[in-house]
Length: 95
Image 1 (cartoon, rainbow, N blue to C red):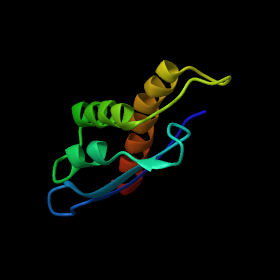
Image 2 (image 1 turned 90 degrees about the vertical axis):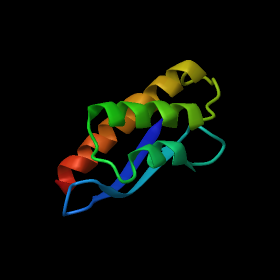
Image 3 (image 1 turned 120 degrees about the horizontal axis):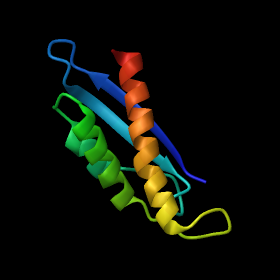
């Protein structure tokens, strides 16, 4: 119904976000990048509040439609949840 992928690299000197990509699937006619969600993370140390903000911005960038699988509202909520989960997992792997 909804998918999210995150690629993140951190600056080894201070742990700030050096590069990040957030990909979303099944929430627009084609897979998209959540560029506003990415921008909020760049150059900053990523904590819980930034993760939540990135998820919120990503959900605003999504263009889901209601279908037999889920409503537009549910898909937007899932974008927030999945971006948070995948970003935390990516940070675990990098850190």
